[in-house]
Amino acid sequence: MKWQETGEVPCPVARSLSVIGDRWTLLVIRNAFFGMSRFDQFQRNLGVTRHVLTERLNRMVECDILQKVLYQQRPPRYEYQLTDKGRDIYPILMTLTAWGDKWMPLQQGASLFFRHKECGKIFTPILHCSECGEAAGVETVMPVRSESV
Amino acid sequence: MKWQETGEVPCPVARSLSVIGDRWTLLVIRNAFFGMSRFDQFQRNLGVTRHVLTERLNRMVECDILQKVLYQQRPPRYEYQLTDKGRDIYPILMTLTAWGDKWMPLQQGASLFFRHKECGKIFTPILHCSECGEAAGVETVMPVRSESV
DNA sequence: CTTGATGAGTTCCTATTTGGAACTTACCAT
DNA sequence: ATGGTAAGTTCCAAATAGGAACTCATCAAG
Image 1 (cartoon, protein in one colour):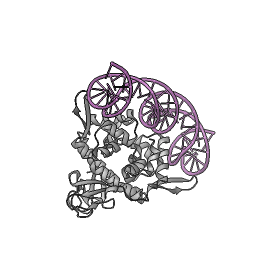
Image 2 (spheres, rainbow over the protein chains, first blue to last red):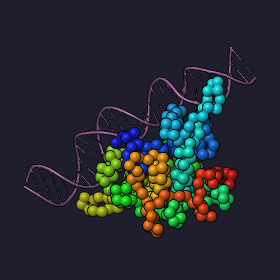
Image 3 (cartoon, rainbow over the protein chains, first blue to last red):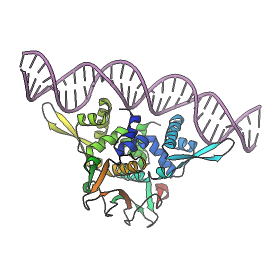
Image 4 (cartoon, each protein chain N blue to C red):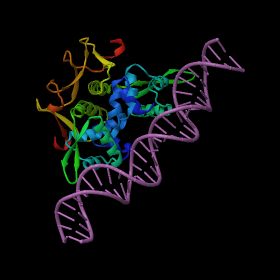
């Protein structure tokens, strides 16, 4: 099975991964959340080769995760900004961060935190149930395939 | 930059991705959550080539996401079971699922749901702040690098 | 006892994707 | 006229992936 065939696959995990399931893509998005938007910023910060970066940015624009915005004429220069679809990847980055901090810690401790503006504190993201509001972890959740709903 | 160099990188997102940041790895883990544990089950269900699957399973065992458990002698056969570290990937799969359902829907609707055992309902996972308990989305969260904490 | 099936890989070859470095194009500043 | 900046392109070598066939130990059937 090739990866371009998975965009229309029934599993939403596979569909998500068909777009954001490679390493550089998520790192570009992480940097976009830190305010980066230009080709050379991404390239220098990540160390990704220019031609892989070109391919990834184009794919994200096609998939409507980033949009090109003209920031200068003569010569025309575009920057890449997160769309609503792209901004909605934030929870994925938060859970990835939480997992990395917990299970692949470095001796000098975490290097990325999240501050909740409403209470002002550094926090760990916890998944809750949209229906009852209580925490929903692996022990309290059952995956259900749609055939059997 | 090569990918094997990123395991010790300061960003926890990059460290997470160095292990689970490729397409097949997360699909294998998804299937493990559905109860699969054997080589041929993974191979047939995913359509991944056997030698890529071998490499991925070995890597996950090395990283302590899966563990090999003998389930038969003569000939010795092992199955792959999620460890605590592996089970803790569940929130990542939930957020990936929620994003895929919302932004890459199929005409016939979602094909994977989560049921909260405590309230019995199908739900969408929402990230909350571990400190105050309120919802924490992209608008109410500030990423902070550790240098500036 | 020969054949066939099962499970978990391994091997081999080809095709695609990366990594790395240099080159291009359009402009501005000195 | 020279150098710098930004955003790519191009080229080649190296690594990774896809596909199909092969191996090995063992059990079951005819």
